[in-house]
Length: 132
Length: 123
Image 1 (cartoon, rainbow over the protein chains, first blue to last red):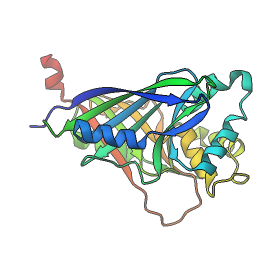
Image 2: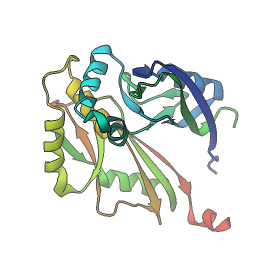
Image 3: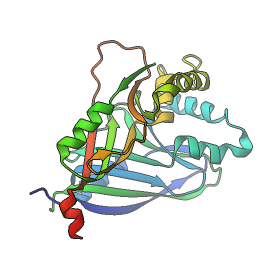
Image 4: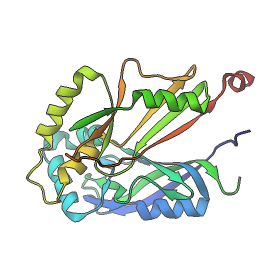
């Protein structure tokens, strides 16, 4: 008989200068380890306005290129259009306690709000945990 | 860009999981491919839009165009499963190779969760 999946929800508070890209891979790995997720999924959701969640390589040149693509969008509507185009959530598969989305692909919080402060990312872990 | 139709594989994975109701999540491993749910007839228009919005040249990062196209389209899809089959309503699942690579082995992960009909009815 197959085991039932469990769900754990965490809220991550991130200090942002209001216009930045923040790599969340380390936080995700820590939460997987601390909560004991063995096989399943990690879902991330950026709650705040003008915050996106993008899965890509975290490299300064590429972040600059992404900024350039976002600047193609009319400034008056950039926040809402960017949210709709790139999304505010990400999903990462986990196998044997480790993320397996690819070596270079990390969850990146993109904040284009130009409003410094604490931003919240909701993290949902779903799957089989080591305590099961 | 090259589109690989994974629809039949998707049906196969759902059938193998033996669930009647639930969800299947598909992940393309790597930071340059994409997974697209689309009708076959719009692939040409989609291709043209992506190439115009994110051209190959003019970026700082080496293969930025592939990363940017992948980030825009996304590398995962979530599809409901009803009565033992994925609900696609005429859409097909495509693995999109954004780079001109040959003989490159790619990995796609499937995560299925759900219940058999008998367990749903018990609730």
